[in-house]
Image (cartoon, rainbow, N blue to C red; front, side, top):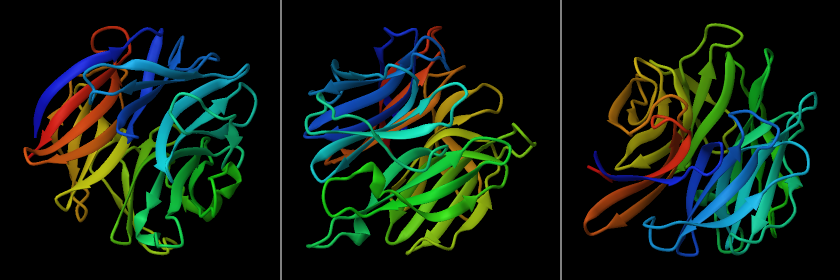
Amino acid sequence: MKLLSVVKIWDRGDHNAFTDLIRFDGKLYCAFREGSAHVSPDGALRILVSEDDGSSWKEAALIKLDEGDLRDARLLVWLGELYLFGARAIAGEPLQSLMWRSSDGCRWQAAEHCADTGYWLWRVIADNNEQSVSRAPALYGVAYRPGPDGDVRLYRAAPQGPLKGTDFIPLVAALNSEGYVNETGLEITDGIFTCLLRRDPVWDDRRNGLLGKAKAPFMDWQWLELDCRIGGPVVFRWCNRLLAIVRLYDEKVRTSLVEICETTGHVAEHLSLPSGGDTSYAGVVMEHSVKGDELKVSYYSSHEGKTAIYFAAIRLE
């Protein structure tokens, strides 16, 4: 793996963090949270767009609410439209997952509630194996409920028309509750669903990540404990290898490209991105060309002082 380039693309907010990246209508879109602090009541979701594969970026939209901290943007392209997922946090109230829809990435419809109140729908992906001529692919997402008795649950949506927040129905209501389980990286290939699950030592000392697998219809899951702690995961396959970009905690905290052994749970670090301190939460877009496969990555970091959004290119080899 070779780091080809990395550039800071946004630092205008007091705290800029929690990114995602996607290609839509031939352009790259990067979404992230902007607020006065890591957790603050003024969090908003900003979207940047690049029409030249990341060489330059401009503002596309800023989504905010009159009340509540908007958290951790996640992007999805589905049936020709761009979707944005996030969560609203208000002190003293249950967390609420939200969804927005746009046809151009600039103008967004009003927020819709999705998932059960108190559950944070972290990331949504499509299962293209379920696609047919007459039926769009089903969508899946894992949501977590924070707290000492928290858990994660698997949601499925199979709408016949435009996606609505009410389309998300729990498929596995108690997916995992082995410790403080929370953020997820999701991937489906050839009918096998893979879930990379973060754990943190908050209410007990369990901290190593978990790797879950299930065959369609994704009701029966098997879990493997990883050999280290990970944070802010995004996972993908390349050449039959399971890769991820995560936060690593040993020695210096950093954002890294890793490979996960699906039989032993070993996490092998291949490349550390310029990062440190408050960092991670990457978005990835894989590009294939005659020159080779390239991974475009958005992430945030505070290694240069202020938390800022970065865009990197990595050659996969």
